Image (cartoon, rainbow, N blue to C red; front, side):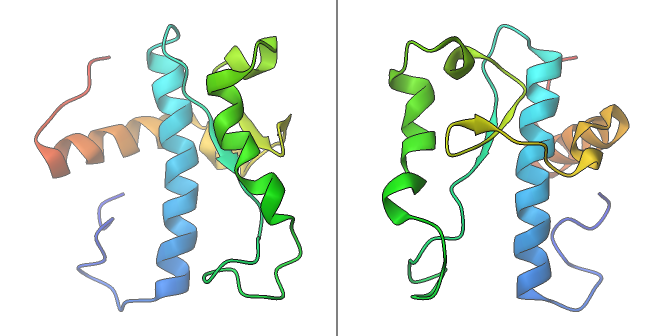
Length: 121
């Protein structure tokens, strides 16, 4: 958490991307924990055949966007939950470290340092 902007390590694009996905999930869980009245979830669209995923990506591009729109338009109770990780509109367990409150708090503190905007506890 002390080098989120890769200033003191050699750049590795793949590693930075993977870390950013991990941090997205930890951030969503930290927000959901601190503000239970705010819906904050994370999702995975899958490895889809886009310019980034490449033509051989195995997931269905038509399914990728549905999980992103689902919480906004669905009446399903699960779509209105908070603090979850979804893949194709189903809960999935992410890296267990994303659920670690100390990790979440360290990330929220780092965000406050980087932006100058502290998030209330």
